[in-house]
Amino acid sequence: MSYTVIDGSGLPVEAADVYLGHLTATGRSPYTVEAYAHDLRDFFEWTCQRDPDFRCLGLEDLAEFFVWLQRSRPARQPGVYQLPGMPPAVGNTTLVRKRAALAGLYRFHARRDETVPALLGELTGPRPTGRYMPMLVHTRRHGPGPESYSLIRIATAPKVPATVTAGEIRRLIEACASLRGRALPYQAAARGEQ
Image (cartoon, rainbow, N blue to C red; front, top):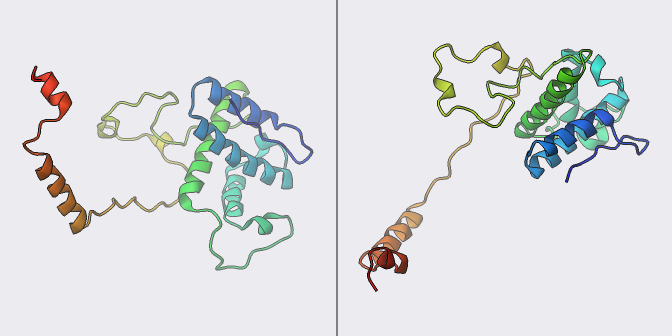
């Protein structure tokens, strides 16, 4: 199952449709494809307000797109301005995902058509385009190359691990103590006991 991005006139956006079909055909998670479809819908909605040909956009234009994304839905219309100090409508983690969706779109189309610039395509990170990444890729002596840094930076807060409360620790120790000395059925069968 794949997803389709529809433009304002009800027709599929070919650039998005081909890319999403490629993601589905190469075995990407349906949740990733769905999320990228939403991200590309926003992108092509924005391009329709400016220049409908995504191949003509530059890096400065894409920076404006990420500013536009942070506006509330009603403020994303042409001629509507948002007051300074308003909270962003989209969090930074979502912006990072939207940047990855755009990078993939540009990388995919740059391989198919030399008129498409790989604006974000080669700037998504040290990860190759396939699924395999060596476990210790971060320890390479030469470090990440210039392709690993996106020119459109989005600050994200580090994820804070959940803290285990004293009560949860006590319940865990009590559960371990109550199981100690009792052989579970599959352990007894593995040892040949009845």
